[in-house]
Length: 321
Ligand SMILES: Cc1cc2nc3c(=O)[nH]c(=O)nc-3n(C[C@H](O)[C@H](O)[C@H](O)COP(=O)(O)OP(=O)(O)OC[C@H]3O[C@@H](n4cnc5c(N)ncnc54)[C@H](O)[C@@H]3O)c2cc1C
Image (cartoon, rainbow, N blue to C red):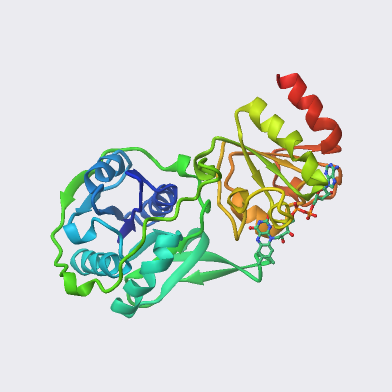
């Protein structure tokens, strides 16, 4: 049983969702006594392969070709299809990133295999991989058992696994030759979209102070900003704060904003709607301050304070200062 992970390049480092896929692959491989290969593509393939080789994988496959130096859906889909043809994996894992959403459906069409997308968990039942997917805005979960002819193309939702749980090891690196021609690439991509808030990457932040509608009005935003500054944290928000124009949209966390996984996520006056939680549930520690003891955010919080943010936060900032 062979699992192949397609790792994404995030400015010369493995994308966090790729590391999360390693956790899923290690879970599958340990339950089914299988092997794991990871694939890195493009102009940073050497650096990415070295980073990937420090994880407990069997093999890291480098794909280098001048036509793959810049991302294109046509080029990447063809490259991944050729790797699958050559290596014959049973399971092919992707992070459900914007890039994967762009090119993986083409791989699926080329192979005539379904793409099982946006899963939040994986388990094993009777030697078969079972994937869990959210339905109806995450009100229900459905299990999908893989059955039939491999390969199975599978993507995982951001923060489905904690990247810290990826086991370290040492893998062999090999380069694989593929055959890409310029005529195969019919689209050209623009420079990658950067998930940044005012020059700050929320996805890479260790500490986040996030502000919700409970802050009351735009004039109160500095209360949250002061706490963030005292902690050395980045400032994020829920959607109503952005919709009201109190903060730019790049600060928004959630299903239509960014997915973050800091060491600490401090939620101020955020109720904990599912569309917000999908973007921050991967945080290592969640601290919530909310004046409503029944607020759903307390169900996922590691620490909760029932208090008025307008009273508590200035005192907290003062104490930290
Ligand atoms: C398709 C779709 C996509 C969406 N995408 C996103 C998304 O990406 N991100 C996102 O965040 N939302 C998103 N939403 C909106 C989401 O459903 C919620 O409406 C939103 O997350 C609620 O934001 P909130 O918690 O700040 O506000 P509310 O739900 O209004 O909660 C405010 C909270 O503040 C508390 N509070 C009030 N005053 C105080 C005070 N003085 N001190 C302490 N606590 C106080 C209240 O008890 C309450 O719990 C989306 C919705 C849809 C339909």
